[in-house]
Amino acid sequence: MREYSAPIRLYKKMPFKTIIKENQVRSRISELDILRGLAALVVVFYHYTLGFETGKDSGIPFGVLAVNLFFIISGFVIFMTLSKTKNATDFIVSRFSRLYPAFWAAVLLTQTIVWLNPLPDHTCSWSEALINLSMIAGPLNCPWVDGVYWSLVIELMFYCIMLFLFTAGILKYIEMLILPWLLLQIAAFLFSIHSNHPIPQVISILFLLKYAHLFLAGILFYKLRFEGVTLSRNFLLMCCLLTQFIIKGFVAGVFGVLFFAIFYLLSLDRLNCIALRPLIFLGAISYSLYLVHQNIGFVIMRALSSYSHITQILVAFFIVLMISTLLTYLIEQPSLRAIRKLYTRLKPADL
Image (tube, rainbow, N blue to C red; front, side, top):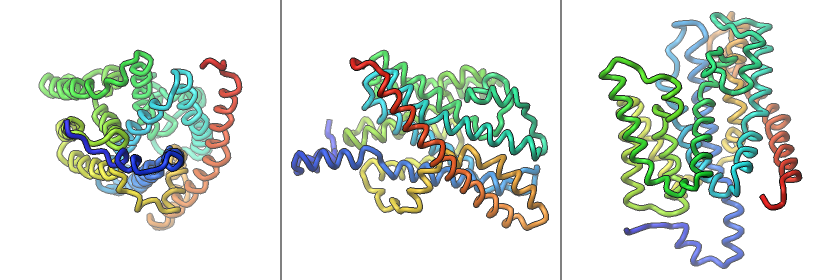
């Protein structure tokens, strides 16, 4: 099968030391962080323009679809992480250190602020907030401290599936699993439509029936970037995009075309133009920003109810930006380094 791989051809012309240096520089792709930051920014302003009071504003049209971009990014990043992982414990520690410390801090901070400044139609007790620390409060029929946490359950399920495939030794056959997985998604969707019976939530989450095609597309974009473009990978990407149209509808499909086009450019290393310092900073704080922006922002906006809505939005955004920066550099990143350093020190030498 004819294959095009620009990185491979380029590396053949490089001295060995240059190749090593290039690999070290590109081991973390800044464009991925930037795209995550931009997606988080869209979600923030979607929620702020939507408003915390029913019917106040219509919200940025289709801003919620930016979460789709998060899932594509996760597919790319998690497959890249597993490609460098030696064993399951390494992966678990890597994901735990990345997700949980910042999440715990965000849950406790948000719960405290909302408890002191209650929001309409939002009730979450402290005992329920402690359940939230598990990151799976929703499936446990427990209210979220902040509604944006729903997507983290989807992320966790994807991690579990990928870890299973990794430990079973079949992750290398992931491209063979993509088409059957997409067909399962479409079959479940058609069944729920024609039978008028929604798929049980636990089944939907367990098999990622609403979002698997996005994670799988991210994996394919990773393959395109590091293993080259092939006809079969392009075909599978088109199948993922078709699944987006079928399951999510026409508008979401159109946005899917945009997201896929952006990632195709990234896969061909043609997205370097967005690697600007302010966007890199936004990408660095994007996880914390996503975690704390909604309910804390709503509390700030309510406190400024006598001012114009644009003033409320700008002040809320500035404050949550500051909180996100502090959370990133005082908790998220130091905790990540400390946990991984401790793990490296304690793990057996043969692991």
